[in-house]
Amino acid sequence: MKTLLLLALSFPLLAKDPYFFEKPYLQLGNQPTQDSLQLMWMGHDKDVAFTVEYKPANTWLKATPKQIRRVDFTGTDAHRVYAATLTKLKPGKPFSYRISADSKLIFESASIARKTANEASHFVVFGDCAANTKGQREVAFHAAQHKPDYIFITGDIVYSRGRVSEYQTNFWPVYNADQADPTQGAPLLRSTLFTGVIGNHDSQPIVDFDKTPDGLAYYLYWAQPTNGPMLKPGDKQVPELQGAAEIQKKFIDATAGQYPRMANFSFDYGNVHWTVLDSNVYVDWTSEEFRTWVRNDLKAASKAKWRIIGLHHPPFNSSKVHFKEQRVRVLADIFEEGKVDLVLAGHVHNYQRTHPLTFKVEPGFVLGKNAEVPGQWTLDKSFDGDKNTSPKGVIYITTGAGGANLYNTEQNNDPASWQEFTRQFVSNVHSFSVIDADAKQLTLKQISAEGKELDRFTIKR
Ligand SMILES: [Fe+2]
View 1: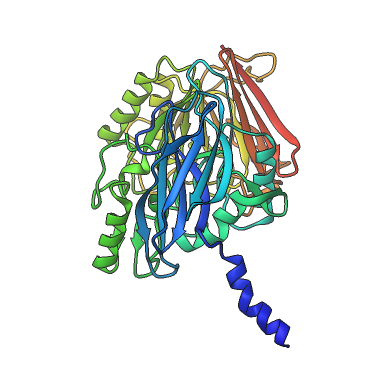
View 2: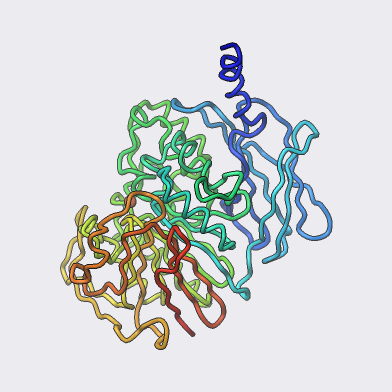
């Protein structure tokens, strides 16, 4: 009895890391540069003198850690977010880093520096993931086996409301697990740059801080570029904040300008240009200001070898679930004009690939809140991604099988239930996309949570 009591008393102390509230992870940062990455971690709510060293080549360099915010909302223990910018990294080359506190080494890991436009890149994409499921942990484990340069999450990053407390149970323990194990996840975040876009579970049209006082955690934990359309709290194209005014203010202040600016952005990694768009219902993508931003962003990236759009709601989807939410079709003309190669989405919890296509919105159509945008598509059915590798049009991928419960498994073997534009549809297993982009070709492989290849196609230049 005495032993049991001792165990019960000491277990929480043993389980709690003395220095880390959450272990280190890598981000692009708000103003990314080719030779830098942002190393971030969380400490407990007390003063600690952390030091950071990293080794881009032969010698160790020092980076200066800064406490960038304190997170103190009902529903979670108060903690502090730290960041250190690692500069002078050698493009595409591995580097080590280590963190000390109280003059004691407390953590070490390694990663790879961002690649340049002349280098091939290799990355993993999945969405709809941190739901604390077996499928999520298996996807994380198998994704890590592919050793990606980086990972992009196509939204619905954390279930079910993108809260600080839900990150603690569903996100960090799986993607920053100490061991790679299909029943746990993998030590990905500490070794692999994570990027992504918000979905409807991360950012709702109305965020009521009386109900979810630790909501919109995306804006507290991620550090992504802030080069998208200028947005500020209270704007039409952002979530409406409700609830206690002092908590709203505390949240906005804590994000230090990231909310709501970090909803849309673009970046380059290696030979790929990414345009990342918030496709939630509060954004009107028929707005001329927003359309112009996307058009100009793609125009400025005309020299990139490959152009990819990352967003949450699929513009072309055959699943019966969420069928009426294909609103982002209104951007198809801009994607075509900007020579986009792939549009990668989530939201629908399965894998789908369209034929290469072009789309004309029905004249006079007015966008509503939930809509399958009517219009006419032209499909390139001769493209097979194997012998014919020159697509006429944009290929739309739904890769939303990253962990949350699967949708429409009954449609897996029922092509008659698919829309005419759908070429592949796999809904009976969790999965993720592995993309290899070099100067001459881009190959996408869809891999199951058990590590088996489900689909593959190649685009050649
Ligand atoms: Fe979603």
